[in-house]
Length: 177
Image 1 (cartoon, rainbow, N blue to C red):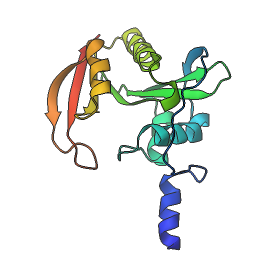
Image 2: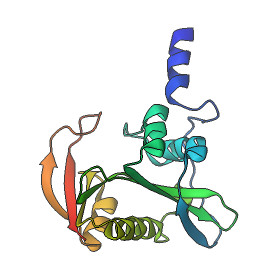
Image 3: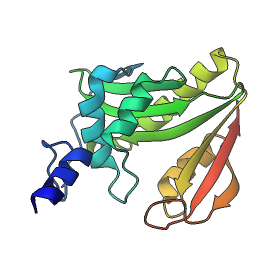
Image 4: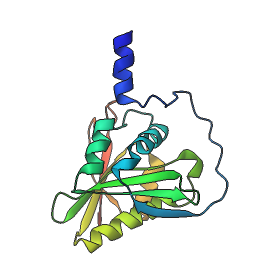
């Protein structure tokens, strides 16, 4: 049992509670977008665990890599009180195609256009770097995300069989910038 606890602690921060979350919308506030740095690793981990509960959680090591890799563009969206409520990570290791590896918004801050703001901010950053397109993967069952991406110009270009760790398929979506 101690071995299983150690394995669990390796992947999940010790201050994360596994109880189902009751979502109460946050009070109205203003938001701003800032670069995301390695100093925010634990906040990213906790927010990621709250946003994704179907096996697509990245490990601490993966996020540490993404936050320290020069070919990754990452941003956080914060409230007026500087609390992180969303993030986006985009890998830019080719010369013209960016890859959104993950985007998340805290459940209590959803339906406020924050994912759209993060997408726009990331796309503008890629345009400034000379990129001409962007890709991402999305669960075939995640209709809300698919609708958001479609509304802002992303199109499905391929179905990826068994893409997620639980065996669910994904759509590869792309957008010309």
